[in-house]
Image (cartoon, rainbow, N blue to C red; front, top):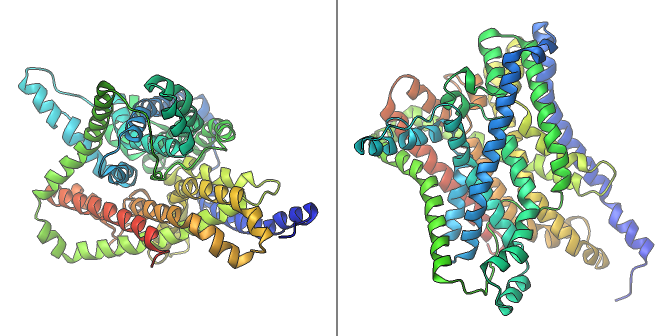
Length: 538
């Protein structure tokens, strides 16, 4: 095959970058419109401007300190427990390991109210552990306050840290494991030489992602905070909007949150720009070391403890849900409508989220000046308070008299935007890997346009797209924050119906709906992942 001149190759590599930049710019414009418009709508609709006096308020300064402290502690504890679990999972081969990894993604997608019910059923004052302690004559657990917030955040984010660590270990070349086996490296030497470098590469990304998720945590802090001493910026924003209706203060607090988190996000993003895929299930890896019986037992114990910690609240949800009249619930017309509404919103939000994410990912891969802004845009979504976004759009639609008519559109777009950061973390490493290994060869073979996408990109992106779609579906199905503002008799989703049943003290119905919603999220995630794996063969 004749060689391609270097100047022609350079021109070919950059020829398709402008369409990618255009796609990224379009996706970025959509994000700016959806997230930025409320910051303009609130002061214009209410005549209030941001008040900088909040920064001199001792109470709000205490709220800021508590917000940062609980987020930092949650990130550290999640990584401290998640990394050993990732190591144990990777070192141990057993049937159902991939199913376990799928289960570890479910806490992130469940409604926070459902998860809080499960946590309280296990760790609350009337929970299983407290009953056991009381039977032994010991005091009951009190998880309200900082301890409850940390417990709930670790429940949500420790499995996420384990999945990220497992993906990083799966990205280690098989030759490294084979060489470690040939050299008969022990457990400590294998960790120091092979495992720790892989974990160290993604550890900043783990800490940063969990930190951002915990900074913007709202429902868990509201339920488990226990009072003013355990209040975060997100809760303070909600209180200023819901009770005081002070838009100027709301915007000032929101900007404070965005700036503070950005000071952590920007350097961490530069540090972790070469991290591997964070949400994959990992490929087939053959490990050749022969651990001793004690080491194997330790790995099994770590997996058992991690599995028990994650699944015990789900078991409580299952037990309480089975006490409800599930057959009667499924026959109710209101449940049918809520289920159909949730599925339609989830499907449309997932499609929109994938389109936005792919646009930003292709923009980031354009290799043009400023392309890194597209990657940063996907992360900034995590720090924008959803309460402010929903309130701004609510006021805008209220002024034009179109709240009920356009509310489903806003809910779909908000759910799509919320899924973008996670979808990008799934899709970007896969695209970067394909570009790094196959793009030059494809151009030498004359592949471009649709042929390049079909023969080069689609085989690589097929499974990540399925995983991203699964996560988007589950995340949208479990959303309550935006729907709580727009929900009405004409717009009722399963989480909103669950909130209504809880508010009317129909606890059995609420437990049954929580079980239905959890099962629906899990089934859709499994079907989406398996469907992506069979697309090419079908």
